[in-house]
Length: 316
Image (cartoon, rainbow, N blue to C red; front, side):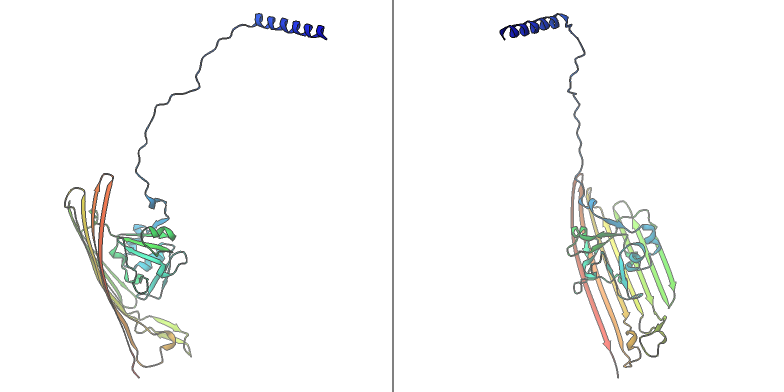
């Protein structure tokens, strides 16, 4: 056994000597596995949270073509918003993503114009001519601008300076059933001051023919007591008093008169009903902005007043 161990040790020693003598040194390139890169800096402003929200804007060309209509007709034509309308000059409300009309906010220059009683907005009383931009915020994204807008928000804004617009614009529209629309814009701008005046007059008798199947016997009739008239104007003043400062004041005043027609089943019940509604509102917003570099500060204050009168009288 001892002889076998000695024999193996001798063979191992011989192999080790042979490998040592036969091995030649090999030289190669000395490449380091670390690359030295020159440092760089990336500087950016904080992302706008609104950029992640789902928002769509009404195309300006579509708005220009429908400038003589109301907000309800514009949304029904140029957006996926569902609009429930009872006819020209009658109640018109919006529903976004299946929510009720009271869960759809309408914001005008940052302030909600929803009725404090019903929480809704009658879109037929909002002339398209009075706003410059119309946007739609869907779902809970709209809560960033207004509480209670679970379905979404319709955002209306006015631009303070529009130097590329014509000084005076007059539109006159005539339609069926004694319908008239007159819209006038007066735009004056210079380097530090801007004035924007808009006026609208809408009137219609709404005396169209319809088939009344709510009575017996059914027959064709002419709509009665369905006339309406809207008169309003907006006045906006913009002023740059000093560098980095901007002041804007806008006032929206409107008078709405409309008759309320009886339902089809009550047309021939007599009593000579007289039913109408007269509204007036004044909405005023004062804004001050300070914008210097990355610093932006905005202060807004508003004064809204509204008067509604409903009248109903019947005689035997």
